[in-house]
Length: 114
Image (cartoon, rainbow, N blue to C red):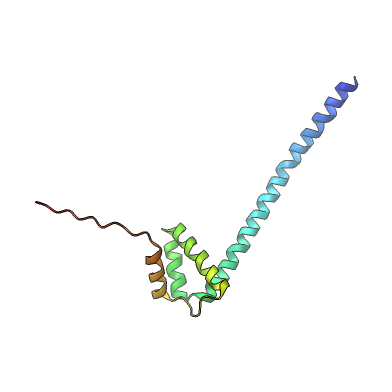
């Protein structure tokens, strides 16, 4: 009978742990969301300091179609700002230049007819 009771106690402990696990998962997910939101706010604050309103507006519009490119550019701008390598604000024209430099070069194909 002791073996049966030990198995029951072990199974009861496993079930209790499984029931508390979803709460821990939900809490961990909530904490991750909070941390991500905090990082996003920090990035926005840095971008407000280093970019003109027109450049930020262009970046916002571009995010709709080229999200990965915008995220890459934002991370580079934040890194440059944190290292103190940006002396002036990024205006719309400078942003256009940066975006063209970041886009992969397309191969020019030409068709010649004989």
